[in-house]
Image (cartoon, rainbow over all chains, first blue to last red; front, side, top):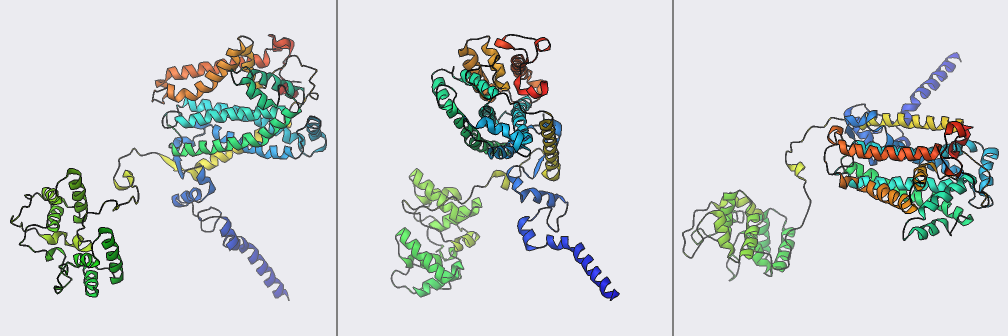
Length: 260
Length: 320
């Protein structure tokens, strides 16, 4: 009897200790992690293994297998481009959260934002993250551009990628600007009024562009809906396309620039 | 016919069925008979007058050529092939093209390539050792020029020079992306997440009273990244401060930098002017932005933040 018990314990212990390695060899596990993945059985930390980690990974769309040694130094890029992209992802996630609780109408917008603080779990935190993340993204994009300039990283063959970068800066500003109106409080209303008045000074097309953006000659409930759609759908769609080309060109133009 | 196919198959080393199909296609493309094509491949006389097909088909094609006669096209091609070291087939095609382009006979071009006198009637046949090019000739007997409109080549692939030549390049010091770059990025993302979380816990996003069209706050300020422009607007005409400077300098000028700055250097010490100009504009924009954000009060008049307070609602929660 006692032997049986000990044997059972032994079997349980054995199956528990071998479970991870069995799991790593299962068909399901191997279907999830492609050959070369460090999570797969048989991964070795060798130059070949390290190459396969990237080559057989979705990251291969962003990163080459090897990068110049100086590019890894944090002080060279400060990760500013990557952080801008990361903030964009954070803003997308927090933005989707906020969309569940927000109605872009004159009557309900302000009340919905107020309700974030009173009746939504983590509502204030997520709204704060979205707002400060947006300001930070404007900053990181701007600093990234300055870093690229000071390293002369816009020089041939990277000229066109610099132009795409300027478009991305403009799109970032527009995303921030359209989002600024959505809380529909005094700050939002009058900041957008001042901002769009400046845009209306543009010759020839100024008034037309202003009319299209504001859905009328001045800000109204229709503007709120228009900015909302621009903010959550149109501009993210456009910026994602430009980002894809931007990242692709970074690779095609020879990876990170330098060393100086 | 069957016999010819068997001979051609033996001479070329391909299965009889393939030889037959290939011969049919070629005959159609060149407008000759299948028998002629097969005979050419088998290296026997074209069975024109019912002459008995001679001899072992294993004999190399070129050796079947009568040596005493004036040099045939095949002989010339083999001679040229031996001289240049290129396959006879390619030389033949090249000579055909050249002859067509220059309007001379193919024989003349080939003779020139082979370095022998242009063959005329009765010229002594140079003892061209046709066997040298025999393998090539046997595999694909010399072809007649392709008729008009028949494409005889196509692009299979583009081989980059690096793939077939040894190119001397500067060695680049590289490291594996995994783990070196990925780890650095992960740390950066975690740091940014932590910073954003702490910021969001400490400072609340501003929320003033509900929007009211009849109550204009004083001062009314644009979002902070446009405050430099708003500051400019208090100095210049809107056409200049609202259009010319942000549009022409801010966007078009910024985008045109790589095409204006033609200096290829990236070392800071070799591009002092560019760095000076960029820093000048950067500082200018920052100064305007800071003045617009913190030194402008009611009526957008100049104030000192330490005497009259800060009129910057983006950081309302933090400033209170």
